[in-house]
Image (cartoon, rainbow, N blue to C red; front, side):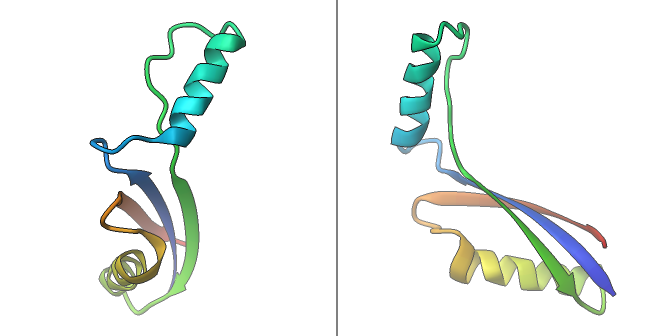
Length: 83
């Protein structure tokens, strides 16, 4: 069966996000007011062939831990749906 995993990877809240800070400062320069914080991460989509949704989740979790996310600096969250 085919599944689609949507993965969001973000820097830990405790860590400085220089890219997010640069965007936040630029918003002020563009007179876009009221933005208090900007955090920038990654969004990844995987198309997966697996026997079950649970099997797909194991593959996604392994990919995140071993390749897609730097667990020292980032957290990840994903959803899996039938594709």
